[in-house]
Length: 172
Length: 445
Image (cartoon, rainbow over all chains, first blue to last red; front, side):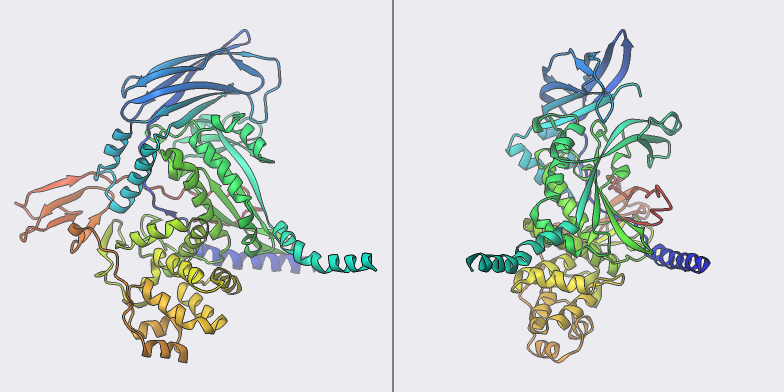
């Protein structure tokens, strides 16, 4: 009896497998993505006597980024001593370094572990974005390109600020 | 006496008041949050993986991500997992994840949830946070690796197998959308939720050489039906997107077997009969218009879809079933089909698609060319076949002075310029079977 049931299950598996393999497919709706505006990176980590020193690099990937507000967050086991700050502009090919100092608080890390986050709120270079998206060699499909341009125009009209971040998990 | 009357009244109205809530409660969306904790060479990432983390290989074949996934209990918990105490500290993509979480729990979805096929009335929603990895010039495969999708899995349930959907939302399809990001991510979720309602098995290689699809691309019948239905569900929540679907039909794209596309104005495209229903935008508009134009149309469309939901779904079959279910609406169905295919179908085509019954004959007897003009392409596109494909494209003028775009150079002596490779579309990430015992099969969109 047990063998019969197992055999039946195997048969069912095979039938389903056959039909699924026939219909198995993976596809995505085509969508252009914008070129990146900003690059945020944590490049090194030095840990000594309960202190963690990090170096973050902020780079513009497209035009000149303006009014960059930099702020920090961390898990409960860490306290960041670096202050929030503002950088007026970061032109392309002029990366800026940010030194981050954190100390251990003695508390337990949270569910995600032990981490530090640097957030950057900034105004992107809208004209540079438009110029990039208007490049028909990179974005040859007119309809899809227009969709991106509509998004840029909307954000520009609202003078929208963008927010990106980098999150560093300690001891990785 | 009064108490007894009150009790009877309460008993009478109880099922009416609480039955829909109880039905909706049967279906739940279980949300999890995934963060990338590290990235690097696959060999490094696979060593000493911290407890509770997993390794996801990148499509570049060299690198890998370490990820940590945690079940979300509520909105505050999700924000805490994302490393923020207020919404103001969330990145654009993280705001999109939060908005998607809220959106998936809103009451409008409760009416759709009981329509999910199968016994397992749960959908897994995985919110993937790619914070710190949005620079596509450094993390070149991030969009491929975490493109949003609905992975459909057959899971064992008692003595049988049931279809289960896992929707992944990451925002990789809306990088750089700024304040528009959250809306775009919610729209993507609604589309993927539409796939969770649908049992269609798409054809092998249904989407062509590149595995991706445009809304105005001619693909295979079952695939175009599935995508059209998912887009219809999206438009129930975002009706303003109907215009985008109409505008897309200025042209139709046809992918070549070896890759690359030919694009034709819809007025002159060489498609016959049911072939028009292989374009997902047309199918999406047929669903949408039936739902909008018929009294209680949304319910009728969803009821008929649910009643006949099966692996071999396609638009002609849906329309024939719809007419059988609601014969009083035959004329509207025929008109809708006629209008959304720009009057390009012959009487014989319409009979073939909708069935040859007296109501259809009556419609055809009085049929006039529907008052629909296909959206006009840009003037320079009017009589021109636009050709583009990944790789080098040659642009040159023929003897009549018309611009030509080809993947081969013109004959010797003709001047030409070349275009570089096209922007990389998001492509399907390889689906990995995490646990073959419980997740033996996965179908993604």
